[in-house]
Image (cartoon, rainbow, N blue to C red; front, top):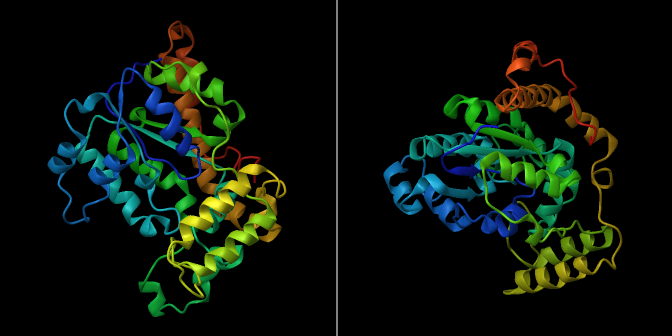
Length: 339
């Protein structure tokens, strides 16, 4: 397999295990420098679109940038605002290219239905008060020129149509330098995936010393209602919500209390995707994402072909892989089985 050089920029997506990579995996890498999220955000998210300067971003990243690792899911756009209708997601890609043109881009994707259900749970844990239908389709009740459309943006299904942003990064950096992975593969075999991932980028890391425990567990139904009720007494930390009365300090206190209760495992099994999305919503999203999911399946097959050809001893079979890469089309399965 190729020895990929240059800074590694892991842009997300949200809800694909980035917390584990940020807290556990990347800090344990010995032959690269993992820079904290605050540095990534300062370099690429702090400046406005018309005030961003690559030289200033490079200064914030420090010297010897070729061996750095950044992992910040908001580089792919905000979870609850759809990357500002994709504008921030697209603009940040250009910022990274102008600052670190030799970067290796890492993008994890997740089954859209599963990701959307997880996004809703994150919305509630982060201060949200609305039910799932209001969270997903609240903007549909607004007229085309309603003033609320010009205020805080909300959920956008386009954000989870990953193929568009992947294709944009492919154009900016070249497909060989954009590495796409499925979260489901990581979740199914964390240790095996991490070993292959480390080998891909030549990362020096002792996997046996890592914490493999679950992070950010989903709440049960009872705790979900408790979160929503508690959130009525704080203005924090999401924009699209109700607030009956703001109690200073309540947000932090209630988060600590409810998360401790959730970690205890005494309040019912964690909610699954089908506990959150009804069959109508699942059918709606399956239909909406079918073309994008087919494009991702095609993109992953192309990546597999390139990886196979780069391995030692594959020269004799390279022509067959090349034919497979050339003939791969978007007629592949349209959705993963998780939906």
